[in-house]
Amino acid sequence: MDKTLFCEALYALPDNIIVKRRKSVVMPVVSIALGAFVVVTGYTLPETMSATDWHSSLLLLGTIVGVVGFVMLLGRLFGGEGRPCLGEVGEPLKITEMSFARMQMRDVMAAIDNGDLDRLLALPESQVAAVTVALCRTSDGRFTVCQPFEYVELEYRPLREAKILRK
Image (cartoon, rainbow, N blue to C red; front, side, top):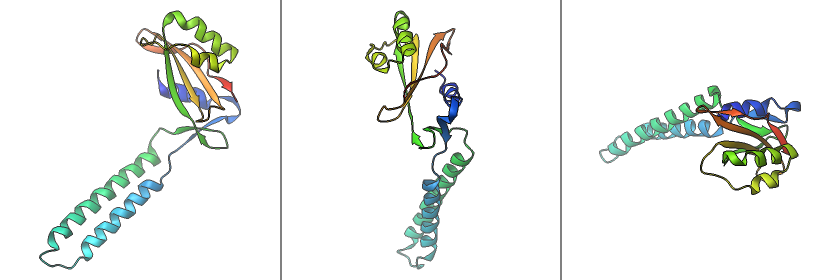
């Protein structure tokens, strides 16, 4: 299943029910600040013979932490991936997959068409993923969106549009 296509289908749902939120930039900024603090601490150590090893180690450690923070910051600012969240609330949604055999397709489609999430979750999963159902839901399960995919010719093709099962 192509997670990007599924997320695009989620973002296309009416009334902006699901929106894309980027991850917070707080951790990368803290990492850059910590790296800078360690580098400054390394430079301000007194130049004694016993502190020479500490001086070099702190400079190396601070540089590494700062560079890692900078790379994380660039990834969060300019990266293409966002995280699906529930509308104005901003509650993050978790994407999971369920795999079913081809002979279960009728039961899977009936459960989705009827909006019966409990029936869908009760179906036994298969090791062979001929039919995959992508679920996007809140941690408490009060909001769930799903979309079925069929594995045909080495790719997953959507069987239906994304459907809200539980609000």
